[in-house]
Image (tube, rainbow, N blue to C red; front, side, top):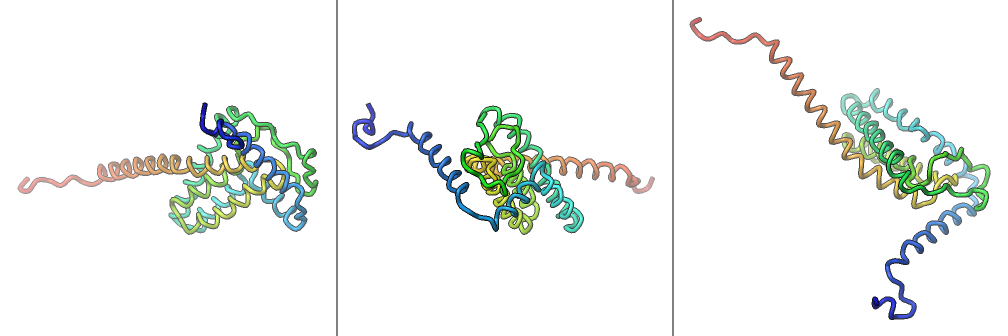
Length: 216
């Protein structure tokens, strides 16, 4: 028998899951009952804007149009990071997690906050994963742009709890997924760019006239 079991009041690591779940539910409930009428509309709109990555598609268009070559690289990094992260989250992790969405009525989420509840499972948050994947991907090519996008990504992640669509742990897991998978996507993009550069150089070399030997 473990030492923790021998001492009254001391619990082993096997209880941590239950306790973390209680904290998760308590945080969700606390946010639900805290009146924030000034924030409700703005966070609801932000959460809606991030659905289907519309917000990030718009940001990538601005980066590509106004940021020159660096902006185009950053936009490509960000969108590729979203593509990889969304695939992993929706096709692999959500089915494994299989967590039910929160019951907004039970927690009395104000109607002014509510957005359409997705039909997918709750863990991890796809919105949070895409948000941080985009910000991390952009930041790899353009750190100055990645910082404000990281702030917006944090607000998007919080908005998913504020509007009642996710538990806090869902958004934390989504954040970790986005940050972890973005470098994988960026590395793949960089390899493709390097291959294209080499092919371009090879093609250009073939077009150059070959030098003739002296005295010929």
